Amino acid sequence: MNIVITGANGFVGRNLYQELVKNDEYNVIKITRETNEGFLKQALKDADFIYHLAGENRPKTEEGFTKGNVEFSDKIIAYTRENAKKPTIVYSSSIQAEKDNPYGQSKNKAEKLFETFALENGNKVYIYRLNNLFGKWSKPNYNTVIATFCHKIARDEEVQVNDPNIELKLNYIDDVLEEFKRALEGNPTIEGQFCIVPNAHKVKLGYIADTIKQFKQDRTDRTLPQLDNQFVKALYSTYLSFLPEDAFSYPLITHSDHRGSFTEFIKTPDRGQVSVNISKPGITKGQHWHHTKNEKFLVVSGQGVIRFRKPDSDNVIEYFVSGDKLEVVDIPVGYTHNIENLGTNDMVTIMWVNEMFDPNHPDTYYLEV
Image 1: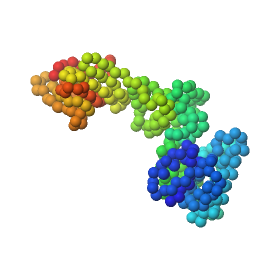
Image 2: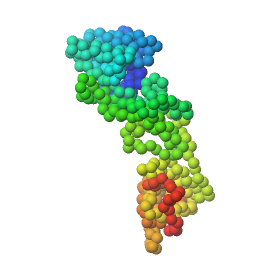
Image 3: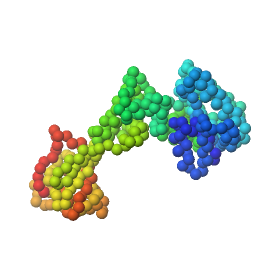
Image 4: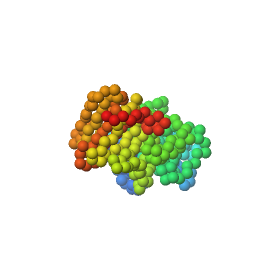
Protein backbone atom coordinates (compact mmCIF):
# COMPACT_ATOMS: atom_id res chain seq x y z
CA MET A 1 0.00 0.00 0.00
CA ASN A 2 1.50 3.32 -1.11
CA ILE A 3 0.93 6.03 1.50
CA VAL A 4 2.03 9.57 0.72
CA ILE A 5 2.66 12.09 3.50
CA THR A 6 3.11 15.72 2.53
CA GLY A 7 4.80 17.86 5.14
CA ALA A 8 6.62 14.75 6.29
CA ASN A 9 9.31 16.72 8.10
CA GLY A 10 6.80 18.74 10.09
CA PHE A 11 5.59 18.04 13.61
CA VAL A 12 2.65 15.80 12.70
CA GLY A 13 4.24 14.40 9.56
CA ARG A 14 7.39 13.28 11.33
CA ASN A 15 5.40 11.50 14.03
CA LEU A 16 3.02 9.93 11.51
CA TYR A 17 5.84 8.69 9.29
CA GLN A 18 7.57 6.95 12.21
CA GLU A 19 4.27 5.39 13.26
CA LEU A 20 3.37 4.03 9.81
CA VAL A 21 6.81 2.96 8.63
CA LYS A 22 6.82 0.25 11.32
CA ASN A 23 4.23 -1.65 9.27
CA ASP A 24 5.89 -3.72 6.54
CA GLU A 25 2.69 -3.64 4.47
CA TYR A 26 3.03 0.12 3.97
CA ASN A 27 5.29 1.87 1.50
CA VAL A 28 5.41 5.28 3.14
CA ILE A 29 6.54 8.08 0.85
CA LYS A 30 7.76 11.34 2.35
CA ILE A 31 7.05 14.63 0.62
CA THR A 32 8.97 17.63 1.98
CA ARG A 33 9.88 21.13 0.88
CA GLU A 34 12.94 19.64 -0.82
CA THR A 35 10.97 17.13 -2.92
CA ASN A 36 11.20 17.86 -6.64
CA GLU A 37 8.11 18.30 -8.79
CA GLY A 38 8.55 15.11 -10.76
CA PHE A 39 8.82 12.94 -7.65
CA LEU A 40 5.74 14.59 -6.14
CA LYS A 41 3.68 14.05 -9.27
CA GLN A 42 4.64 10.38 -9.55
CA ALA A 43 4.09 9.72 -5.85
CA LEU A 44 0.55 11.11 -6.00
CA LYS A 45 -0.18 9.22 -9.22
CA ASP A 46 0.79 5.93 -7.54
CA ALA A 47 -0.70 6.63 -4.09
CA ASP A 48 -3.32 4.47 -2.42
CA PHE A 49 -3.76 6.91 0.44
CA ILE A 50 -2.66 10.52 0.96
CA TYR A 51 -2.07 12.46 4.14
CA HIS A 52 -1.87 16.10 3.09
CA LEU A 53 -0.26 17.68 6.14
CA ALA A 54 1.90 20.29 4.44
CA GLY A 55 0.93 23.89 4.99
CA GLU A 56 2.11 27.32 5.92
CA ASN A 57 1.27 28.92 9.24
CA ARG A 58 4.12 31.40 9.71
CA PRO A 59 5.08 32.78 6.30
CA LYS A 60 7.13 35.94 5.89
CA THR A 61 4.27 37.61 4.02
CA GLU A 62 0.49 37.11 3.85
CA GLU A 63 0.88 35.83 0.29
CA GLY A 64 2.68 32.88 1.79
CA PHE A 65 -0.58 31.62 3.29
CA THR A 66 -2.16 31.47 -0.17
CA LYS A 67 0.87 29.84 -1.77
CA GLY A 68 1.47 27.28 0.98
CA ASN A 69 -2.10 26.37 1.83
CA VAL A 70 -4.30 27.08 -1.20
CA GLU A 71 -2.06 26.83 -4.26
CA PHE A 72 -0.14 23.80 -2.99
CA SER A 73 -3.40 22.03 -2.13
CA ASP A 74 -4.65 22.79 -5.62
CA LYS A 75 -1.49 21.17 -7.01
CA ILE A 76 -2.02 18.09 -4.82
CA ILE A 77 -5.53 17.79 -6.21
CA ALA A 78 -4.41 18.24 -9.83
CA TYR A 79 -1.82 15.46 -9.59
CA THR A 80 -4.17 13.17 -7.67
CA ARG A 81 -6.76 13.52 -10.46
CA GLU A 82 -4.43 11.49 -12.64
CA ASN A 83 -4.55 8.57 -10.21
CA ALA A 84 -7.13 6.04 -11.39
CA LYS A 85 -7.14 4.40 -7.93
CA LYS A 86 -8.89 7.47 -6.50
CA PRO A 87 -6.95 7.46 -3.24
CA THR A 88 -8.52 8.68 -0.02
CA ILE A 89 -7.13 11.99 1.21
CA VAL A 90 -6.76 13.18 4.79
CA TYR A 91 -6.43 16.94 4.83
CA SER A 92 -5.16 18.58 8.02
CA SER A 93 -7.01 21.84 8.33
CA SER A 94 -7.34 23.90 11.49
CA ILE A 95 -9.92 25.29 13.88
CA GLN A 96 -8.58 28.62 12.62
CA ALA A 97 -10.51 27.95 9.39
CA GLU A 98 -13.55 29.39 11.17
CA LYS A 99 -11.81 32.71 11.80
CA ASP A 100 -11.38 35.79 9.66
CA ASN A 101 -7.60 35.96 9.53
CA PRO A 102 -5.18 35.27 6.65
CA TYR A 103 -4.21 31.82 7.93
CA GLY A 104 -7.80 30.77 8.66
CA GLN A 105 -9.04 32.08 5.32
CA SER A 106 -6.38 30.14 3.43
CA LYS A 107 -7.25 26.94 5.27
CA ASN A 108 -10.93 27.50 4.58
CA LYS A 109 -10.28 27.97 0.86
CA ALA A 110 -8.21 24.77 0.77
CA GLU A 111 -11.05 22.91 2.49
CA LYS A 112 -13.45 24.01 -0.22
CA LEU A 113 -11.03 22.85 -2.93
CA PHE A 114 -10.99 19.37 -1.43
CA GLU A 115 -14.74 19.30 -0.91
CA THR A 116 -15.29 20.16 -4.58
CA PHE A 117 -12.70 17.60 -5.67
CA ALA A 118 -14.43 14.86 -3.68
CA LEU A 119 -17.77 15.65 -5.31
CA GLU A 120 -16.37 15.89 -8.82
CA ASN A 121 -13.85 13.05 -8.81
CA GLY A 122 -15.33 10.60 -6.29
CA ASN A 123 -12.37 10.44 -3.95
CA LYS A 124 -13.04 10.18 -0.23
CA VAL A 125 -11.68 13.25 1.55
CA TYR A 126 -11.48 13.48 5.32
CA ILE A 127 -11.03 17.06 6.46
CA TYR A 128 -9.72 17.46 10.00
CA ARG A 129 -10.09 20.84 11.66
CA LEU A 130 -7.32 20.16 14.13
CA ASN A 131 -7.11 21.77 17.54
CA ASN A 132 -3.84 23.04 18.97
CA LEU A 133 -1.51 20.04 19.06
CA PHE A 134 1.35 19.14 21.36
CA GLY A 135 3.86 16.34 21.78
CA LYS A 136 7.40 15.27 20.99
CA TRP A 137 9.26 16.77 18.01
CA SER A 138 7.17 19.96 17.97
CA LYS A 139 9.08 23.18 17.43
CA PRO A 140 9.37 25.89 20.11
CA ASN A 141 8.38 29.38 19.01
CA TYR A 142 6.60 27.82 16.04
CA ASN A 143 4.17 24.91 16.51
CA THR A 144 2.60 25.37 19.94
CA VAL A 145 2.90 27.40 23.11
CA ILE A 146 3.46 24.12 24.92
CA ALA A 147 6.58 23.45 22.86
CA THR A 148 7.82 26.94 23.66
CA PHE A 149 7.12 26.61 27.39
CA CYS A 150 8.72 23.16 27.60
CA HIS A 151 11.84 24.28 25.73
CA LYS A 152 12.33 27.41 27.80
CA ILE A 153 11.51 26.01 31.23
CA ALA A 154 13.82 23.03 30.67
CA ARG A 155 16.60 25.57 30.05
CA ASP A 156 15.81 27.90 32.97
CA GLU A 157 14.45 30.58 30.64
CA GLU A 158 11.53 32.82 31.55
CA VAL A 159 8.14 32.22 29.93
CA GLN A 160 5.59 34.95 29.34
CA VAL A 161 1.95 34.40 30.24
CA ASN A 162 -0.03 37.52 29.39
CA ASP A 163 -3.41 36.08 30.37
CA PRO A 164 -3.33 32.90 32.49
CA ASN A 165 -7.10 32.45 32.08
CA ILE A 166 -6.97 31.93 28.31
CA GLU A 167 -8.36 28.45 27.63
CA LEU A 168 -6.80 26.30 24.94
CA LYS A 169 -8.34 23.27 23.25
CA LEU A 170 -5.58 20.74 22.76
CA ASN A 171 -4.93 17.30 21.31
CA TYR A 172 -1.94 15.14 22.11
CA ILE A 173 0.05 13.83 19.16
CA ASP A 174 -0.53 10.16 20.06
CA ASP A 175 -4.28 10.70 19.83
CA VAL A 176 -3.79 12.35 16.43
CA LEU A 177 -1.83 9.33 15.21
CA GLU A 178 -4.48 6.89 16.43
CA GLU A 179 -7.20 8.89 14.71
CA PHE A 180 -5.25 9.15 11.46
CA LYS A 181 -4.77 5.38 11.50
CA ARG A 182 -8.53 4.96 11.92
CA ALA A 183 -8.98 7.17 8.86
CA LEU A 184 -6.55 4.93 6.99
CA GLU A 185 -8.79 1.99 7.87
CA GLY A 186 -11.88 3.87 6.70
CA ASN A 187 -13.20 4.61 10.20
CA PRO A 188 -12.59 8.30 10.87
CA THR A 189 -14.29 10.07 13.77
CA ILE A 190 -16.81 12.38 12.14
CA GLU A 191 -18.59 15.23 13.87
CA GLY A 192 -20.88 17.23 11.66
CA GLN A 193 -19.17 18.33 8.46
CA PHE A 194 -15.62 17.56 9.56
CA CYS A 195 -13.50 14.86 11.15
CA ILE A 196 -12.15 15.33 14.66
CA VAL A 197 -9.48 13.90 16.94
CA PRO A 198 -11.10 12.58 20.14
CA ASN A 199 -9.80 13.22 23.66
CA ALA A 200 -9.48 16.98 23.36
CA HIS A 201 -8.27 18.75 26.50
CA LYS A 202 -9.52 22.19 27.52
CA VAL A 203 -6.84 23.75 29.71
CA LYS A 204 -5.97 27.25 30.84
CA LEU A 205 -2.67 28.75 29.81
CA GLY A 206 -1.61 29.59 33.35
CA TYR A 207 -2.20 26.01 34.47
CA ILE A 208 -0.03 24.74 31.61
CA ALA A 209 2.86 27.03 32.54
CA ASP A 210 2.63 26.22 36.27
CA THR A 211 2.45 22.48 35.61
CA ILE A 212 5.53 22.48 33.38
CA LYS A 213 7.43 24.52 35.98
CA GLN A 214 6.51 21.89 38.55
CA PHE A 215 7.86 19.16 36.25
CA LYS A 216 11.25 20.86 36.45
CA GLN A 217 11.00 21.15 40.24
CA ASP A 218 10.01 17.47 40.45
CA ARG A 219 13.58 16.46 39.63
CA THR A 220 14.88 18.40 42.61
CA ASP A 221 12.11 17.12 44.89
CA ARG A 222 12.42 13.56 43.51
CA THR A 223 8.66 13.58 42.95
CA LEU A 224 6.42 12.63 40.03
CA PRO A 225 3.27 14.38 38.78
CA GLN A 226 -0.24 12.92 38.99
CA LEU A 227 0.06 10.59 36.03
CA ASP A 228 -3.51 9.30 36.34
CA ASN A 229 -4.50 12.64 34.79
CA GLN A 230 -4.29 12.00 31.04
CA PHE A 231 -3.44 15.57 30.12
CA VAL A 232 -0.70 15.81 32.74
CA LYS A 233 0.66 12.42 31.64
CA ALA A 234 0.88 13.58 28.02
CA LEU A 235 2.30 16.97 29.01
CA TYR A 236 4.97 15.34 31.17
CA SER A 237 6.08 13.09 28.31
CA THR A 238 6.21 16.14 26.06
CA TYR A 239 8.29 18.08 28.59
CA LEU A 240 10.83 15.28 28.90
CA SER A 241 11.29 15.27 25.12
CA PHE A 242 12.51 18.88 25.39
CA LEU A 243 15.24 18.22 27.95
CA PRO A 244 18.65 19.43 26.74
CA GLU A 245 20.64 16.45 25.50
CA ASP A 246 23.30 17.05 28.13
CA ALA A 247 20.73 17.16 30.94
CA PHE A 248 18.93 13.81 30.82
CA SER A 249 20.44 12.81 34.18
CA TYR A 250 20.12 14.48 37.57
CA PRO A 251 21.73 13.76 40.96
CA LEU A 252 20.14 12.17 44.01
CA ILE A 253 20.96 12.76 47.67
CA THR A 254 22.65 9.78 49.32
CA HIS A 255 22.83 9.42 53.10
CA SER A 256 25.86 7.28 54.00
CA ASP A 257 27.48 5.97 57.18
CA HIS A 258 29.48 2.92 58.27
CA ARG A 259 26.43 0.68 57.73
CA GLY A 260 25.95 1.58 54.06
CA SER A 261 23.70 4.12 52.41
CA PHE A 262 20.11 5.16 51.78
CA THR A 263 18.98 7.09 48.68
CA GLU A 264 15.48 8.30 47.85
CA PHE A 265 14.71 7.69 44.17
CA ILE A 266 11.07 8.65 43.51
CA LYS A 267 8.32 10.12 45.70
CA THR A 268 4.65 10.52 44.85
CA PRO A 269 1.81 11.94 46.93
CA ASP A 270 -0.53 9.05 46.16
CA ARG A 271 1.72 6.04 45.45
CA GLY A 272 4.39 6.42 48.09
CA GLN A 273 8.12 6.51 47.49
CA VAL A 274 10.92 4.26 46.25
CA SER A 275 14.42 4.22 47.72
CA VAL A 276 17.68 2.31 47.26
CA ASN A 277 19.21 0.85 50.42
CA ILE A 278 22.77 -0.51 50.51
CA SER A 279 23.88 -2.56 53.53
CA LYS A 280 27.49 -3.51 54.28
CA PRO A 281 28.31 -7.16 55.12
CA GLY A 282 27.12 -8.16 58.59
CA ILE A 283 25.02 -5.01 59.02
CA THR A 284 21.44 -5.09 60.32
CA LYS A 285 19.06 -2.24 59.56
CA GLY A 286 15.50 -1.51 60.59
CA GLN A 287 14.50 -2.59 64.10
CA HIS A 288 11.18 -0.72 64.08
CA TRP A 289 7.48 -1.14 63.39
CA HIS A 290 4.61 0.96 62.00
CA HIS A 291 0.91 1.47 62.72
CA THR A 292 -0.18 2.27 59.15
CA LYS A 293 2.94 2.71 57.06
CA ASN A 294 3.68 -0.40 54.99
CA GLU A 295 6.61 -1.32 52.79
CA LYS A 296 7.85 -3.72 50.14
CA PHE A 297 11.49 -4.89 50.04
CA LEU A 298 13.21 -6.29 46.94
CA VAL A 299 16.82 -7.44 47.29
CA VAL A 300 18.43 -7.11 43.87
CA SER A 301 22.03 -7.88 44.80
CA GLY A 302 23.59 -9.80 47.68
CA GLN A 303 22.12 -12.13 50.29
CA GLY A 304 20.26 -11.44 53.48
CA VAL A 305 17.42 -12.18 55.84
CA ILE A 306 14.34 -10.15 56.76
CA ARG A 307 13.02 -10.86 60.25
CA PHE A 308 9.61 -10.06 61.74
CA ARG A 309 8.14 -10.14 65.24
CA LYS A 310 4.95 -8.79 66.76
CA PRO A 311 5.69 -6.43 69.67
CA ASP A 312 3.90 -8.68 72.17
CA SER A 313 5.32 -11.99 70.87
CA ASP A 314 8.63 -13.86 71.05
CA ASN A 315 8.01 -15.66 67.75
CA VAL A 316 10.47 -14.49 65.04
CA ILE A 317 9.64 -15.05 61.38
CA GLU A 318 12.49 -15.15 58.85
CA TYR A 319 12.53 -14.63 55.08
CA PHE A 320 15.84 -15.32 53.37
CA VAL A 321 16.36 -13.12 50.34
CA SER A 322 18.87 -13.00 47.51
CA GLY A 323 19.58 -11.09 44.33
CA ASP A 324 19.79 -14.50 42.64
CA LYS A 325 16.05 -14.99 43.15
CA LEU A 326 14.09 -11.77 42.86
CA GLU A 327 11.02 -11.77 45.08
CA VAL A 328 9.17 -9.04 46.91
CA VAL A 329 8.68 -9.25 50.65
CA ASP A 330 5.76 -7.29 52.09
CA ILE A 331 6.40 -5.55 55.40
CA PRO A 332 3.00 -5.64 57.14
CA VAL A 333 2.02 -3.13 59.79
CA GLY A 334 2.21 -4.26 63.40
CA TYR A 335 5.45 -6.26 62.98
CA THR A 336 8.81 -4.97 64.12
CA HIS A 337 11.28 -5.90 61.41
CA ASN A 338 14.90 -5.74 60.35
CA ILE A 339 17.04 -6.72 57.38
CA GLU A 340 20.54 -8.20 57.78
CA ASN A 341 23.23 -8.63 55.15
CA LEU A 342 24.39 -12.25 55.39
CA GLY A 343 26.81 -12.07 52.45
CA THR A 344 30.36 -10.90 51.95
CA ASN A 345 29.47 -8.08 49.54
CA ASP A 346 27.16 -5.09 49.73
CA MET A 347 23.46 -5.99 49.69
CA VAL A 348 21.27 -3.73 47.55
CA THR A 349 17.59 -3.48 48.39
CA ILE A 350 14.86 -1.57 46.54
CA MET A 351 12.42 -0.32 49.17
CA TRP A 352 8.91 0.97 48.51
CA VAL A 353 6.84 2.63 51.21
CA ASN A 354 3.20 3.62 50.79
CA GLU A 355 3.63 7.26 51.80
CA MET A 356 6.21 10.00 51.51
CA PHE A 357 8.21 10.50 54.69
CA ASP A 358 6.71 13.11 57.02
CA PRO A 359 9.10 14.07 59.85
CA ASN A 360 6.14 15.38 61.88
CA HIS A 361 4.33 12.04 61.63
CA PRO A 362 6.99 9.37 60.96
CA ASP A 363 4.84 6.42 62.20
CA THR A 364 8.08 4.60 63.06
CA TYR A 365 8.68 3.02 66.50
CA TYR A 366 12.04 1.56 67.53
CA LEU A 367 11.92 -2.03 68.75
CA GLU A 368 14.54 -4.72 68.15
CA VAL A 369 13.39 -7.93 66.59
